[in-house]
Amino acid sequence: MLTVDVKQALGAFRMDAGFTAEGGVTALFGQSGSGKTSLVRVIAGLARPQSGRVVFDDDVLLDTSLGRFVPPHRRRFGYVFQEARLFPHLSVRRNLTFGRWFAPRGADHRDLDRVVDLLGIAPLLGRPPANLSGGERQRVSIGRALLSSPRLLLMDEPLAALDDDRKAEILPYLARLRDEAGIPIVYVSHSVTEVGQLADRVVMMRDGQVAAIGTPSEILKGRLLSAHERRDAGAVLAAVVRSVDVAHGLAIVDAGSVEIVVPDPGLHAGQAVRLHIPERDVMIATEKPAGISALNILAGTIAGFEDDTDGLIRVELAVGEVRIFARITAFSRDRLGLAVGRSVYAVVKSVALAR
Amino acid sequence: MEWLALSEEEWTAVRLSLKVSTVAVICSLPAGIAIAYLLARTRFWGKSLLNGIVHLPLVLPPVVTGFLLLITFGRQGAIGSLLYDWFGFTFSFRWTGAALACAIMGFPLMVRSIRLSMEAVDTRLEEAAGTLGARPAWVFLTVTLPLAAPGIIAGMILSFAKAMGEFGATITFVSNIPGETQTLSAAIYTLTQVPGGDAGAMRLTVVAIAISFGALLASEWVARFLGRKGEAP
Image (cartoon, rainbow over all chains, first blue to last red; front, side):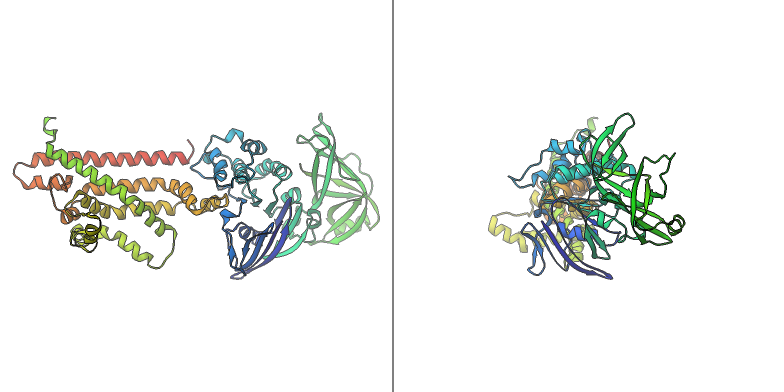
C-alpha cells in the first residue's frame, strides 16, 4: 500500500495533497497544472518537496520531518514517462534489459519473453529506438519499466503525446497489464476516457489539492468535472461478454440488468470488460424509436436531473440497477415533459470499450 | 620518392612525437572527463575560476606555460622536487615532461569538446536510468558517457593534434634533446637552423601533414559511426 502526503509552495502554486493507493490502478486525474505530475515525481523520488511523506508497505521512502529521503534508484518504482525516454544508443532489447542489471537478486525477474509477449514488441527487439513509432516507443518504455522488477508502476500521461489511433493501439495493452502484471499502478492522466477504462480508483486533483477520491463511476459522472472534461463524462459499467456475433463483428455484453451490443474487437464469451457510455452520446425518447441505426435502445426510468452549464442538464436514468446519464437541453426536457419517475427510452449512440 | 626516406634521427623524432602525444592524450583523458563533468553538470563555488584556469594555456603564450611548468614541475620546482624526493621521478628533460607539457596545452581543447557534448546529453534520460535502479555512477557510465562519446573522441583528437604541434611550452620546459625531448616540431625547427637542413625539414613537414590529416579523417569517421548508431540506419 502506498501512502503519499505532500506540501509544497512554489511561487503562486501551492500543493497540499495526500492519498493512499492499494492494488490495481489508482488514477491521478485532473487538468494540466493541477499538480499530478509533481505529485508522481515526488513518489518516484525525482523531486523533493518542502514537506512530505511517502510510505510504501512500511518502507518509509520520504519523511521530511525525519530528514529521510531514499533516492529514486533505491525505491524500485518503475516510471513510464510521457515521452518514453528510451536510450538512443541502445537497441530495443538492451533498453528492455537495462533495468535488469540493477534489480536485486532474488527479486522476481519478470521474464523478458512474457513482457515482450504482453506488449507485442517481439518484432522490434533488434531495432534502434530512433525508428520506432510513438506507440511502439511507449510500449517499449512500459516493458523497460516492468523488467526492472518494480514494486509499483508510475505512469505519467503515457498516452498524452500520441494521436488517437496510437492511443487506441496501446489502451488494450494497458488493460492487460493491469489484469496480468499484478503490480499496483499509479496512472496520471487528464483524459476521462483513459481513466474510465483503466482505473479502479480515481484521485481527482485540482489546483494542487485532492478534490475528490472515489471509483471511476463516482468521479466521472460529471458534477466534479470541468467544462472541458465534461465533454467525455458519462457512465462507467462493469460487464461480461455473453456472446459474440462473428458475422456482424458484434458482441453482446451483460452489464448487470442490461444487455448492450458493442462492436467486437476480438472479444470472447465470458471475458470481463468495462464500458464507458459518454453522456453526450445518449439521447432520450419518450416512445420506443423505430427505424433508427442505433443498436442500443434501453428502457428505463428517469431517476433525477442535475443542472449543467449553458442551458444543458444531465439526466440520470435507471435501467434496472444500472445508472446511465444523458446530456440534453433544458428546452428538450420541458418540451418532452420529462419528470422523475417517467418511463423513457435511452438511445445510446456509442459505447467505448476496454478489455 | 627517394627524398622522402627519413634518416634515423628523423624517425626518432616522429616516433617520439607519436609516443608523447598518445601518452599525453590518454593520461589527461580521465581528468578531462572529470573536469568537463564538473563544468557541465554541477554548480559549486569557484566554478568560473576552475574554468578560467583550464582555459589559461589556450590564451597564455606557450613559453609562459612552459616556464610555469619549469618552476613547478622542474627538479627544483615546488611539486617537482617533492616528486623527486618521494618517488625519484622527474619530468625535467625527459620525454614524460614533454608529454606533461603537451597534455596541459591540449587540455582546454579536450575539456571544451567533452563539456559541450555532455551538456547536450538529455538529463531526462539520466533520470529515467535512475528510476530503473541505476546508481548515479552507473548512470554516468551507461548513459552519459556513451551519449557524449562523439565529443569525447573529438576532444581526444583535438588534444592529440595540439600535442603533435606543441613547440613553445615543450622546448621551454624540457629543452630540445634528440631522442628524449626532441619532438617533430622541435626537430623541424632545429633542421631549419642548420645549413642544408631544409630537405630534412621538408620531409618531416610532409609527415606532420600526413599525421594531422589522418587524425582529422579518423575523427570524422568515428563521429559519423557513432552518430549513425544513435539514429536510423
